[in-house]
Length: 199
Image (cartoon, rainbow, N blue to C red; front, top):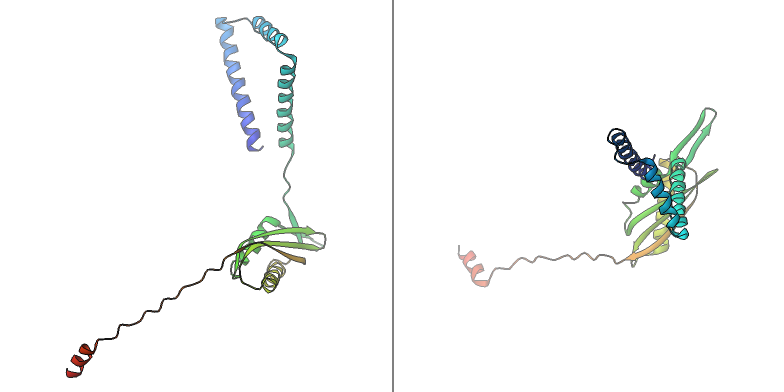
């Protein structure tokens, strides 16, 4: 049961608990008659605009359908097959694979905010990589380096058969210029040099 269903169930159980307490108290105290309450509800519904009543009932129906869909719908975990033999299959969660591939790209220079999306196929996987690049670099060479790094990591470290490795540059970031300041030693004045010679 997901969070939305839990909230609805908690509210419904609280309403049912309050209703039960009031009903039990009404048995001994006699605060009201159930027929009077039923007549009020019927009279209110008949006096209400039929379009408003239909809208309220439709809203209740939609909420009930949403609760049912969320209760029976389970999001499937995307997995990919690494190897298959007579004893069975070896499967890996694609979300974890994407995270590992993304972490392997942190050492590549001039590449920022990498994102990896893996598409499983029957005989392997397709890897789509997205990131920002530094300005002023050779884009073709850098993208080739990234695609090869992704493909090699997925095949050598994770055991996947990489059918295709694609790369998309989603933006460019200005290259940071490192400023090096040269610290020059102050030369002693002629008078100080003469004093040192006399000593």
